Image (cartoon, rainbow, N blue to C red):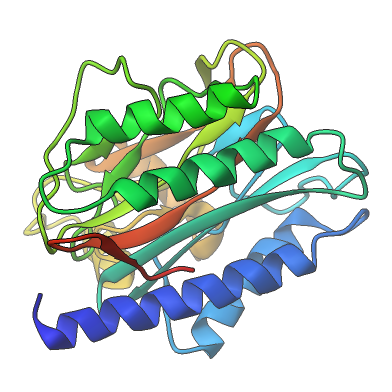
Length: 284
């Protein structure tokens, strides 16, 4: 990897790690989700980065893609809270997440299973490893905690201004897909754990990304492209969010994803750079 690009990744990882930890520390009963997301995004800017996607705050059975909007709920006791942070420097992305429970530890087994599965997978990453094997490692650890992996959710590779760039890291060994990792690949590993069936259902859309021809003459498209490039964004980042209705065909939609039986979900995630022998975790 080019040394300058490597420095971008390392700096993005350093910022993302710090923002994740500091944001988790302010989660408390009665706190507003929107205030927490805006805190994370502003802290990212203060530290010299840019948000690679809207801060995700997914609670209880909500697994991912939930970013708060004006008027959203507050944290409540016993909430299982997943904070997912994305930071980029010049388009080079670090993606990281962790889970805590507000005031209680009733669901601690889910959190521990996700973290241990993440660590086990990272320990196996190096040049030549197939991601289906990583899925088997993740699934075995999760099941050793008497938990179930979320079968439809995966880790992913990242490239410049691309949060999902083609490589997938399943969270179970029986996945029908897999990719061989190569030195220099940048991947986010993110086990999700539950005690439900592990299936997902889709909800509303709060996060979007641009698709289509970057040479589009659509003025709103060009405005959004200049602001966010091809990275995900949310309507609360826009001056006139209702304008999106005019260009839905040019948008990728990220629906809120929930456990199909409404069982709580935990998540843990790090971004790593694959090496000939092992990998470097940039969001530790």
